[in-house]
Image 1 (cartoon, helix red, strand yellow):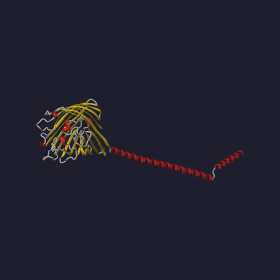
Image 2 (image 1 turned 90 degrees about the vertical axis):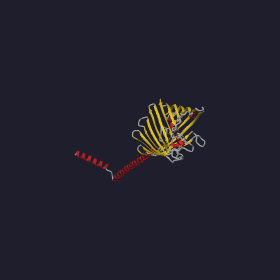
Image 3 (image 1 turned 135 degrees about the vertical axis):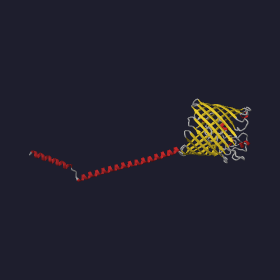
Image 4 (image 1 turned 90 degrees about the horizontal axis):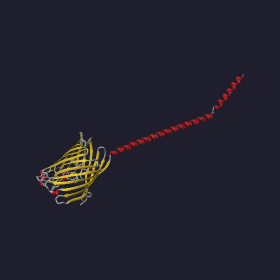
Length: 409
């Protein structure tokens, strides 16, 4: 009996507890509303997160686009560069004329040159060179302003270029490379000056290129010399028209082959034919052929330059000056560079603008000197010179010394 009463009591308590925990309808509605609000909040949070992610992705895409554009612009900028360069040289000459002992003592800022070059893209570029000679130019002034280069070069094939405009003739050692830190001696050597004649430029078009192991070529069609017959001129140097309203009745054809396949060695051979170096000023055409060959070699400290050049001109030029139908010259220049800063040289030069004459008309010049490079692009120079005329005409002989400084960049 007692066990039955106890069981009934426990059951009653249990039922009462269960009934106490069961919510009413109103309580159930409030619970459902609360849970729905939590669900909506979770949905909003997820949507906001997705929106932020979308915005982030969009911004990343925009950043990538900007990076691509900047990269593209940088590539274009890298391909389209304008560069500035140049060179200059100051000379002091202290020379004595052997015929009468008179002296040439002068200091001259001989050349101030600026290069402005522009690369339009990977295949097309501009080269230009503007020069002021002797510091001051103008009416009655000793100097002049000259445009020595202004041409467009285009790569029409791998290792092959076409150029058109005003450019230096591909001949000799110094005509294309004459920055003062690249050669020995204060003044440019008299053979390339008087026979080639450096510095020499014309207007026209040319093909250049490289092939094989160290071979290159140049082929040019340009304006030619225009010697003044009325003034009795005959030297090839007097015929440089400098592309200043240059007469173009007769053109010039130039070809050069060069070999640089051995380190430190350059071998060059140039031939040029001109139809009429007087540009139809005489009753008959005076055609001319130039042949030039040279070697430039450097092995460790030792250097050697040697060059030969000769003009063969129609004999009609002898009506103006006897012997002018042959104009030739040569020089040899050994040198030794002790260090990056110091170098010495000796040079023998022989030239004659009247070599076709039976008379002794040639000139010899001996030079010895030293170069000091403050750095590879800045140089100071000293040299001694002694001249001798083959016919003992001492009025053409100047002996003495020269000092100079130069730079390029």
